[in-house]
Amino acid sequence: MTEAVLYDVVGPRGRRRIVAGSVVGLLVIAAIVALALARMAAKGAFEADLWRLLTQANVQRLLGRGLAATLRAALLAMALSITVGALLAVGRLSHRAWLSRPVGAWVELFRGVPLLLLILFAFLGLPAVGVTVSTFWALVLGLTLYNGAVLGEIFRAGILSLPKGQTEAAYAIGLRRGQVLRLVLLPQAVRLMLPALVSQLVTLLKDTSLGFVIGYAELLRSGRNAVEFLGGRYSIPIYTAIAVVYIAVNGSLAFLARWLDRRTRHRYGRTVQPSVADEAA
Amino acid sequence: MDAVVDNLDAYRQGFVTTLALTALASVLALTLGTVLAAMRVSPVPTLRGAGTAYVEVVRNTPLTVAFFFVVFVLPQLDIRLSFFVFAVIAVTVYHAAFFCEAVRSGINAVGAGQAEAARSIGLTFTQSLRLVILPQAFRTVVPPLINVAIALTKNTSIAAAFGVGELTAVGTRLANANGDAVIAVLLGVAGCYLVLTLPSGWLAGRLERRVAVAR
Image (cartoon, rainbow over all chains, first blue to last red; front, top):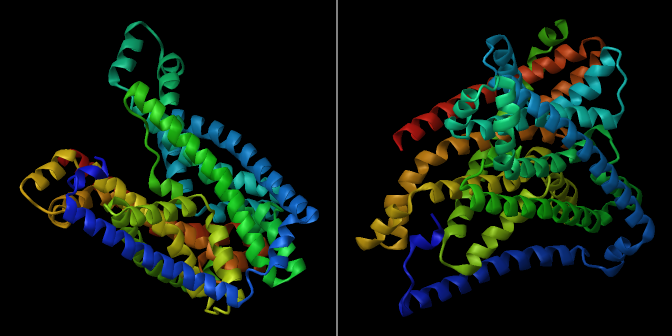
């Protein structure tokens, strides 16, 4: 249902009311923004030298290196999570209870704990049993454990969303279970779940910022280091710049996801919807 | 194992802090999210635009960055509150966008015929929303709302990095203090989270199936 169904095409009186509502809404929003800006201006948040900092080459280089570190961790974790997720989905869909039950439990457990805790497990727990890990690998490992489980569920939903006739037809021409999955179900399911997959990858990219907690020098940590070096008053321009970078990168990925979603829906009539909750976590 | 048993009191404190943070932020974020959702389906363009802008900005920003703005930028503006209140603000601001999307998708899931029928018997926008759409949307929307609340519960762990003594912070402290029992200590923390998330997830799944049958 589109929102337009909720109300009629408005007449003159309704139009006047909407204009009045717009003006009031605009005034309220403008008042909130103005209040915030006034407060910031009073504390000197808009002084030119504060923001000129962002044009300095070494600050840009620092943030650029941070972004590169963020992307490096994100890309590796994405590749690993997709692999783990595919394996978990196939495992959970298996008809053998000794395989599907433990895999199901694995997925539920790793989806049920905070990602930060998994990263801490890798960062603090592995050294305790004698395995040394760098902050980079602790972050990647934590991200993979968590997102592998989430992606596993997305893949499973994709396969389950296919019409039963596909499986039955494949069995009828004599394919074995593995072949049915590989040759018939997966190629179709991938198309349907691609939008949900991309939107989960946005979440993963956002979550690399948790590397900050264990001291991996990603975008956020680099920014924090810069602020600690330069002084607290520079926190506003630097964190704003970081937020803008995140919004730009994630926004374009989210745009891609939405475009894929529209195209898939147009061609195949449906998609696997990403869950709002998975996006939040 | 001893490290866990000896520190049950610390665990309890962390657990209570996590619960308090979760409960407060959930209520506030749900309220703000519902207001945002109402703005996004309203016929007033400025409200729609503002709601959309809020959601788009927040959902593409990591929660950690939201924490940075609250914990490090607000004090620059001479707004000084306790770390707990800061954490409530950051978690609320972030999750309001997702509660909004969950509510909105619930509204969108109600069949178009319902809204058309409501209008054709002469109900106004507010009436059709209040009497026809929302009561039905509420049913489909409860499981996703629970799921967002679960995500919120897990995300409160990030407050550990910003001075709040909740579960994860307790876990890190105990892990550093008990170098020989790190895994046991962290497993204890994981258990505490699972006690909160698994039953709620199970409840959400059950409700979801019930609603699916009813439709």
